[in-house]
Length: 426
Image (cartoon, rainbow, N blue to C red; front, side, top):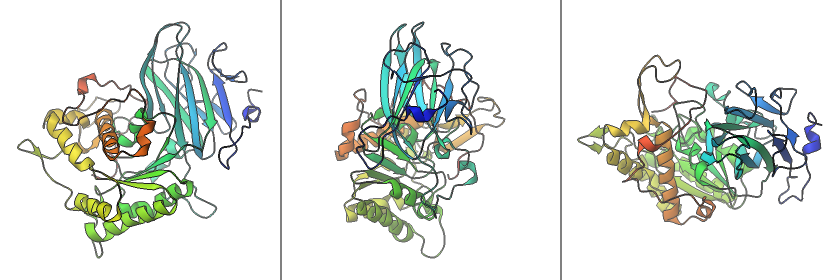
């Protein structure tokens, strides 16, 4: 039975045209609160071409009751999946962090006492590059190994003393989806020490919404469309969904006839609006994050007139606008020129295994910076009174970029994967 996942596909009344599917896995033989039909996972269960579920990417835990991080994958088709993790251990206290796919944060440093169980639910969006029988997204070579685009849904169990007793996965395409479109400041970064706000904002939303990140490093509004990234998002979009577009960082570097903030860029933004509204979904614009470029204690403008052009299109087309450009200026200046390094990828050589050169990047964020900027985006949503803020978790507290969280208090457990090459774009 363990090898026959089809026995675990429990047919339920579908809320959409897609038949619901369920997978239930227990990492302890006597875990209370899991489905009676749950598969008891053993250390020898590895995900592979011949196995639809199992431990993945790194070595399996020798004993599942040990404080060992792990990845667990399940082969699933494109769609939204409600994931419920049962965290805690009968034998010890635990502190567990849960991420999914390409390091999307869902559960942060959750503490449980010995014998305590806590269930956390969230929705993970899964997509492949394929759009239909004739089209697919045009992935860059470095994207081919991204967890976001493989054939499986992957859960990462991490933390100071991780303990996961069970994982339940249920297909649920009834929830609204927030599609993220943008560049390296938005994309789900797979590897340490890079991070973006798109993979942190998931932390603050419950299981009433899915967040689907289609952003990619180096993209402009027009190249995003040309690579069929928008087409893929649109192919999965339904009435009541949302689309966020954050561009301008790389668009300003485009040269040639027809280029410019108020021509090529504005035209591409209009495409995002029209295509989203055609599907009875809501477009939202986000102005680009500032670069860390200080002079006399103040952030210098480096985006030419692209933020203003986005605001102009938003006003003209009545599109909600989150001014992340302004909020990140406040955030960096509040930290100051020296301390703001702690929000970016600034690390001496040898900080990470295999890092032979110093990192000095004033565009791309580390996990702390991405985490803070995700809160800026949420504050922008709240100011606009967007309906999706009803899906925020109860533990979200208001954030003021003029008074950021202390970086010393931010605790992040590194994933086991590191990349020396910086993301595309600057």
